[in-house]
Length: 448
Image 1 (spheres, rainbow, N blue to C red):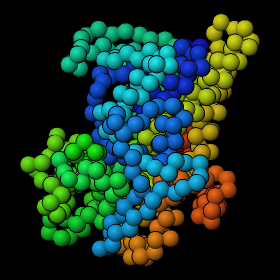
Image 2 (cartoon, rainbow, N blue to C red; image 1 turned 90 degrees about the horizontal axis):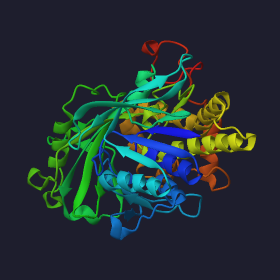
Image 3 (spheres, one colour; image 1 turned 135 degrees about the vertical axis):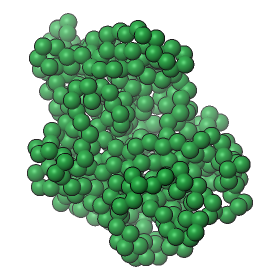
């Protein structure tokens, strides 16, 4: 079996590692060259750390991986520190690692397992056979500066995994459009040289005070990178009436201007520009599978509507897809076939999509409802006034938002969240049944 992966981010490199170490021939096409920037908060929850552990990826402090103890939440004049849950199926620590180093570490880890990673290969479109099945990709070759050379190259494979992020040229060229009935967020961040760089809590601001003291839309974060800088950023959802109407860079400047001077979040201490990116949430591109191709991570909108986390879901989707394809390769060898049967591969890809929906569909439905609620300032203020003074309640909220619920056993919080999700319809990752333009962010019975 030959597998072609578009994109060497967390989803693509994770899938490549699992496939290669199982003996599957895998090629990864990456547009940029490492090391390269990605807009991100650089925070890895215990859910993402678990994926790092399963990969066997070293993450020692001396190599730039900084551990954190949990979440520090700030709102309504209160500060609550909530350690990550202990004693379950997730590690009791999170990590901070810049994407500049994280993505390259994942890609090189995949290479050590036997994956071939080709940098400077920009996928322009997927290739299909006469029946419409995806059979490869057409690439524009880029020079060392990222400019097109004018040369193109075709790659063919038994299956293509689209892991090329929110803009996903692979999926778009196959006619898979973004869904407007699912949440979308934007995130903007920069780095400041700051004495807070060694903070061992992931700090979230649930209310953003502006320069004039009035609240700003969205939420913010301050994550200590440990290298002398802090990653400071904000996110806003399209459920907010201000979405798309603001200068987000100015919002970030107004917020940081309101912070204590000794933190150093000033223009003179800024290390690098403010960068922004979209956060595709709640399966906002479907279907996740078409004949010959599956979507992974951000390409399939696998970002949590609860907290904007995408890395853990990207890595998990890569692991799941690889497992189904490894099974297909084993069936091929068992049958003594030179090439895998296309119908068997497609059947297993459909099983991958079903598995993704079963794992996160109900959680994302709850997240979509949450995103709609917090877009209403009055509701958000009431929720914060009610929840922030009750640490026990906030611990449940953090477990829900970060999706750290134990699948079996666990405490009362785990059982309560499992029951809630069991009663919640799954967000669909199939093809929309009606035009997205007439849909709302909240789930409907036909497409929840």
